[in-house]
Amino acid sequence: MTPSLKKIYSGKVRDLYEIDDKRMLMVASDRLSAFDVILDDPIPGKGEILTQISNFWFEKLRHIMPNHFTGDTVADVLPAAEAQALEKRAVVAKKLRPVKVEAIVRGYLAGSGWKDYQKTGSVCGIRLPEGMQEAQQLPEVIFTPSTKAEVGDHDENISYEACERIIGKELAAEVRAKAIALYTEAAAYAKTRGIIICDTKFEFGLDENGTLTLMDEVLTPDSSRFWPADQYQVGTNPPSFDKQFIRDWLEASGWNKQPPAPRVPAEVIEKTVAKYREALTLLAGN
Image (tube, rainbow, N blue to C red):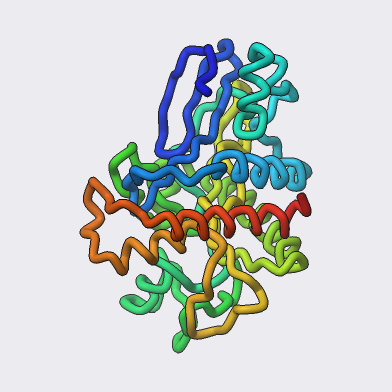
């Protein structure tokens, strides 16, 4: 169901609708984007599961910094039938001015970080010890920002100095400190639930007073790499709880990563939904 509000933005996964000049409705769709291409086949229930995971983390981490919640429920802003249909996949969020970098935090060496390390011995310009293996825990958590791409473009990893040039030194330092604090606390909790959070991406915005605010989605299997702790082994990339499952299938299919993407088999979609649901159950216990 589509809300009876004016649509103001459609992203790869989320759609935003206007409520008033201070608030908007953020609706998580079942669309899946991989390698910055939106796949033809949705993942049934994905938007609801990811919204529940995000809501869990927003609540759990709110002592670290403010977030985009207004305190209103979906039922406060939509007619009853719409509210009922959308309550699990929509949130009422503050309108914020987005910070123009993506805050990526890494606790382990994987993905583009591993590729970068193999070539340069560094990740995004941060020098690491020699002889590290794939999936190894980093000596300390690192902040590796990237630029925010428009729909259809690729995010680009950038150095911390470039991040300072884009958003200013003071804001860059605050973004780095908050992102590392959020990741560190979340990773410690997730470990007690049998999940290793390898890396994650946070999005921040500024409110009308210039206060840095956590927004969008938090620590979901779409914005993070989740590994089952009991299958973790240094030197190999563990099977993950996230869209990596579909990414691996796409990589193996020989697709050139240009639209259109190949049709994903039903059993791969079913397994992906099961992975998302398992992550929600383990983390939030529901």
